[in-house]
Image (cartoon, rainbow, N blue to C red; front, side, top):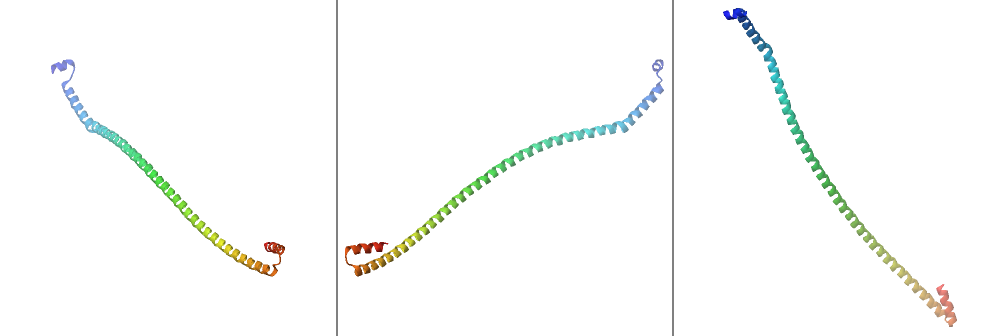
Length: 161
């Protein structure tokens, strides 16, 4: 201890300063370092959690993008199928309409031909009746007026008029 006194260090004062330093260290650790360290740990945990959440969000975003792409592809495929079905249906309906129009045209032509044949038969019947009447009249005139060939010619020209 004498050595310490020769150096100008008081032993009891040194001991008191060491005790004060220990108490100060304990108080700082308990009330300053502890909460600061706890706050730093909490902040570190929050940052790590944020990084993990960001990474999970990136993965989720990538999954959603892939699903979105798959849904878009599926939607395009379905749209193409719907368009193809609509085109097929349109072609089928067009063919059906053309077929129906042909059938109706053929029916109309058949009806028209029947009407023409009926009109033709009617006209032929009327012509035959008229010719028969003319023949009867001509015969009557010829029988009543048969005198010579000039009379015949005159009678034929009158009948023709």
